[in-house]
Image (cartoon, rainbow, N blue to C red):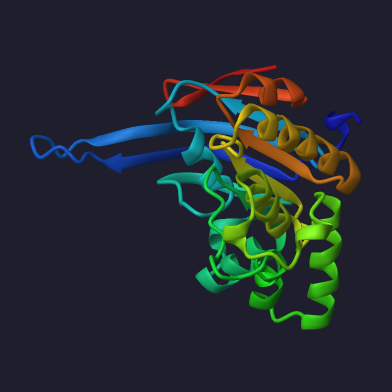
Length: 235
């Protein structure tokens, strides 16, 4: 794929983000991101790396429209996402972006398939269709035999696979993962890492991962390093 001949799926233009200091002795803003420009293309796999506190998760949250920049533009297929209303943005996020976090955030007391069905139910899709889609994606992540087990009865690795299935059930254009295996042991981490790569190839989805795990970063096609509030290296 020659990315230079394609329009980017997502473009960041002069993105900056500041937060108010929690220190009582100062009212100065803390700069997290400064004038970040970056383009993401369909089907890419990207690892975002850097020291703790450098703005990796903030960058991911802005791309996922969970947070707003202080200034700059976030374009999806050349449309500025932050021109949308909150309701429009929520619909966009639910249909176009999948999220996986370090903590799986599954609903306890609900089965694996019930957890995976949630995004489709929020979008008022046919319950029958979303159940079919949820079964299919759970089978894809290797949990066909566990679909009716409650979240709390699953292992840590299985719970993260359910979270991954939930993120993918709406067939999003991009999957954003923030330390997706940070709470898993080495074996389960490796399995989820390989699964992410397989799903990228099979579904053709864009994948962007924030990670401190060099093994996971090495599986991505592109590595983006953040330092001093800016992207300092892309390789």
